[in-house]
Image (cartoon, rainbow, N blue to C red):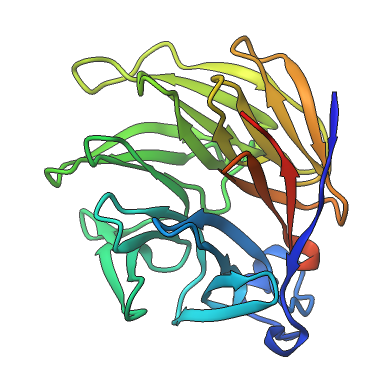
Length: 287
């Protein structure tokens, strides 16, 4: 089943910055990139936030036409996750580690910049469990040539656990409804891994849940209310909807470009970032 998408919003021309950045040198062969949207996340008032990775910016979309700059700083923000207190977003920042942004003031604060005095490779995405534990990926430039990407759990108590240390480009991640399984998009493996979370806090029998094709791979993910995994694919131009056994049961096809990077679900709709055009698309998704 194919579900069409439609344009919800796109970054206004006045906010675009067509310049070369450190991020574009590393990821876009030094091309000028005016924006690269990621991290769609809603606050408790139903307002949508997105990140602009190469220019270190976080925006709130008050309406599709009204973009408010919440924060701008020396970083490369990718994934966002609303903190349980509802007042802050936590940021997976490729350059600076795990940060938080105060939604009222825009103040950006470091949460976890280093582990054992070493910088991370480059955090990509993050998700909170109901108990306040934070799971995040440390992707960097890893891939099949260097499968050393990591998946961490930052416990609410402050302890940090490395759950995966051999990931070929760990990217988006999402918890199952019962929080007994963590799904991780391994972009350069072109697959989603299934990571069981055991009662003692460890994991074992990690397996490949689903495989894809294409020049890139799975990126951000979400879980719908029927337990289906929704996977943004960063080169195939769609959201793949997977059954509980990893079968493709539906697709949400991009109405813009092919760089579909992430999504967020709210009120019977899926809001999807298409990063190459700086667009946010929307599709009806009752589940």
